[in-house]
Length: 84
Image (tube, helix red, strand yellow):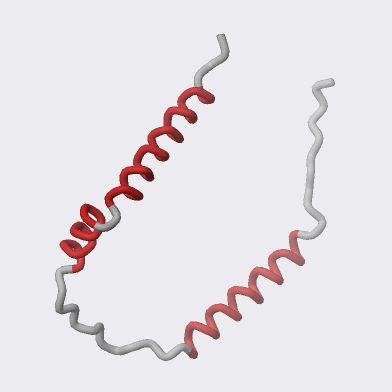
């Protein structure tokens, strides 16, 4: 009782090699990707369009999502409170 038990991973070198290989692969893929030089011009006010769609066509799912998130927050508060 009271002794410290140290845990060391024997696979840390293998993990570092695999993570490095994955990083190199992703960087090579990103360097070869053809990216557009200029951003396209947006002719519509996107913020206004999203707001109008959310408050007209998708108002019911938007409100149901708000209620679902509120219930989730109340559930998290219930489970996070200390036991009495």
